Length: 175
Ligand code: ZN
Image: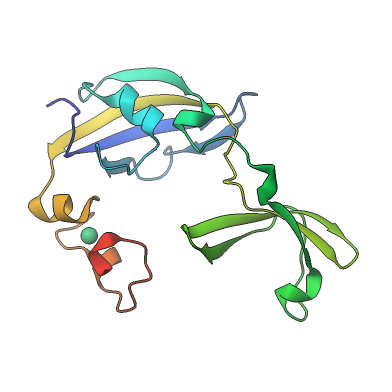
């Protein structure tokens, strides 16, 4: 069965940056399962996967515009250390989640100078060309419930996205 819209695709992958540094990999973890054609993964990788079959392997490079976008320097800003609360260690490289207009954003501490903390709200992979080695493990039809929710369900039910009462999990099924 080939990869196409509204099918559940399972892949093993290795992701490296331009310098060849390992960013992420499914090795030693679960393969990644996602619902094809539903913006579950970056567009550039989805395009490369279209039409592939289980057992197919390929390598591809995805430019920032087809991945996490270009960096926006206006998203680099300074705050006061006390904004983090009392007795909180703030160090460069720390990442935390911030809830903004566009949902959950990852914010990275890029500098600490006295009481002044510099934050970067760009996606950590913004501006990066991503290099993937991918192997298609499995392709199956999605269930009706998966199509309705626009994402894959690991088990028969939707335990991780529909048990929340506050609608804050970011998955459409909670709205
Ligand atoms: Zn769901």
